[in-house]
Each structure stands twice: as structure tokens, then as C-alpha cells.
Length: 183
Image (cartoon, rainbow, N blue to C red; front, side, top):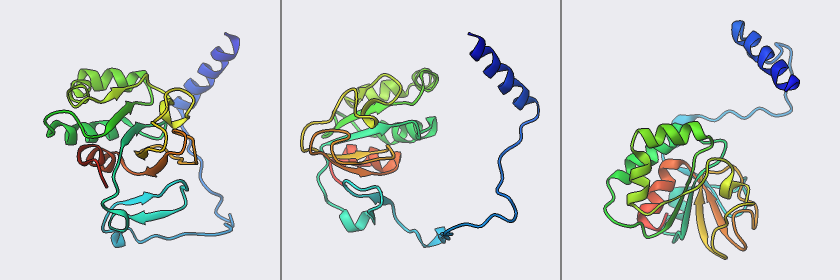
């Protein structure tokens, strides 16, 4: 309890005068990557099972998808809203197994209040308890040897399921994959 009180006091003090970290002006970097975002004309995914193996959607289009996971600590409520808006237009049960796991209970409550949990339910999505869920691979798991689209940050072998091939993508592309059953 004492530790929490100290942390709360420190956070309140920081909120009174927030200072964000900035790089030193004389900082030297090993490597600098500059990406002209205007050259990106289509979605980019990371391919199974290596987050460094990035390809454009047209390079892998048509691949059958079995399951879709929208969740992880790196998602925010806007990702779930965007996916929900796409799912609103779908009538019936999805051809894929869709998992939804917001990062926090606060997000879950807000998405419920906004009606998105009803949208997820209407298309047959499995809503998980907020938190790590499939991303960590220590709770539920996808089917063995399934092909998955995930919004998590890692797709290492067997993390989401035994023998699963996991593509990493945006929430919007994940929702489209859930609807179409393919990339």
C-alpha cells in the first residue's frame, strides 16, 4: 500500500508539470530509417512467423484465413471502433473465428456502452477478458495449424497456437480478413 501511495503521489506531481522525454541534441544513432509515407499505397503485413518479414497485401492476397485476433496492449479503443464499424455492415456469422480482447476493462466498458460489443456478438465474435489473451499465448489458443491475422505485435512460432501461421496487420485489415475469410 505504501508503494502504491508513493507511485500515485509521483504521478500526480508529474501531471502537475508533465515533461516528456526528448533525445539529446547531440545524440548519435547507430542507424536512422526514413520512410516516405506517401509511397505506401496499400496495407503492409508482417508474414508468418517473423515480425521483420513485411510484405504488401497484394504480395499475399488470396491467402485463406481461419482465425482473426483483434487485441493486445498496443491496440487502442479506436482500433476496436474501426473494426466494429466494418463489422456493422456484415450480416450473419463470420466465415472465420474472430477473437476480440481490448487491452483494458475501461475500453471494454466504453465499447459496450457504444454498442460495439453487440456488433461483435451479432457476427459471432468471441470476446475475451480484457488483457493479454491470445497475444501472450498463455490463456486461450487458436486451432492447431490455423492461419491467423492478428493485431498483436509478435507472431513468433507457436505463440498464438501450435503450428499456427500468424500475419500481423491493422485492426481494419483484420476485420476485413474476418469478413472475407481471406487476405
